[in-house]
Image (cartoon, rainbow, N blue to C red; front, side, top):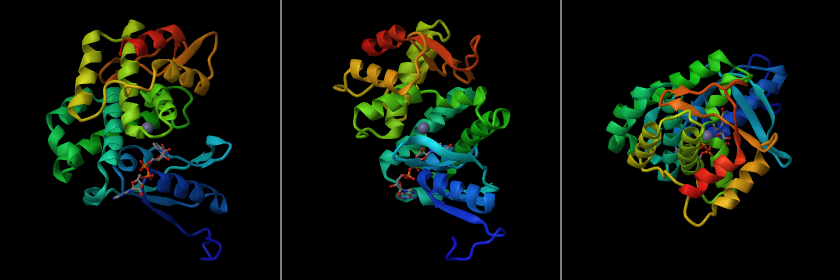
Length: 276
Ligand SMILES: NC(=O)c1ccc[n+]([C@@H]2O[C@H](COP(=O)([O-])OP(=O)(O)OC[C@H]3O[C@@H](n4cnc5c(N)ncnc54)[C@H](O)[C@@H]3O)[C@@H](O)[C@H]2O)c1
Ligand SMILES: [Zn+2]
């Protein structure tokens, strides 16, 4: 940017997947202490999730999410025809985040995704476009209510506590989307064990995942003990409890006495993992 002579009046345009939008947004946040940026996401995950909400950052050898800034783009423009070249595994990752948004805040979106699963999985722009807009609307409304993640925004972590553990235990052989899908299934089961969610709603979530070609259980052979150990290593545990964002119904997240991060005894998570 220095070589190009980019001054305070420049604009960063991010054309790429979530890695690109995260990096470009961070450059825009810090160049001249902040210049505008425009996101042109090219992956379904970036269109549905990463390009929206203002979190930007870069990974460093010291860890994920240590270096970053809240700096929303001035515009997000998604051209769905770009998705024609996206590999199937990357489509699954985007779909998993869309399912997450439905469970967080748009019950009918889950039914609509399932009803159109064939067209959705083959990323037909005419069918996918309106559903993508609804998914983005959920994320935008969560972020508008709690831009800097003081409490409510953590509902967007649904499926990610167990999901990250699955990614780690697999040595990143499992894609983010498939890990988060399995994570949402496990965490829905945890919500039932915590008396927050009915078994019927849990099964509805699992059926939707399967209909969309996403896994509803951790991959066989990973070992539930290893996933539980990775969950504990990843999360700060307090008095043997891990905080989860949990649904109380499709479309509504549970709020506990301490907010939207619900403390769950580790044995409860262990029992759910062992049951799958
Ligand atoms: N800032 C946020 O709120 C937020 C939210 C979710 C995820 N993220 C971040 O987003 C990143 C994941 O995003 P991602 O899944 O887009 O990863 P990515 O940017 O690595 O893209 C995935 C792969 O798809 C390729 N690709 C992108 N668009 C393509 C297209 N149109 N055709 C063919 N190939 C294409 C990329 O080159 C890459 O190989 C992670 O780093 C994650 O931390 C950020
Ligand atoms: Zn995610």
